[in-house]
Length: 86
Image 1 (tube, rainbow, N blue to C red):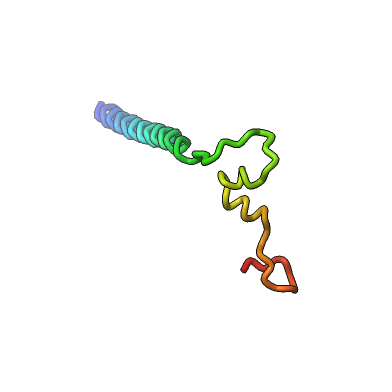
Image 2: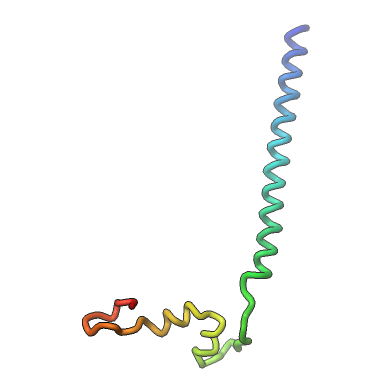
């Protein structure tokens, strides 16, 4: 009888620990999901409304300045190559 009681206590503690771990992981998952939802509200706020068929690059360049600068290309500071990013 003594071995059965000690075994049941061990199994109960193991189930308790596993439940705590599962609840902790689910809490991390829920926290991550809510943080991502909040991030999506603040990530992209367009400065200018751009139509789908906007032909002027300067207009969408106001919303995406880094991409527009790379689209314009590097400044030509030397006569040997166009890869210079001076």
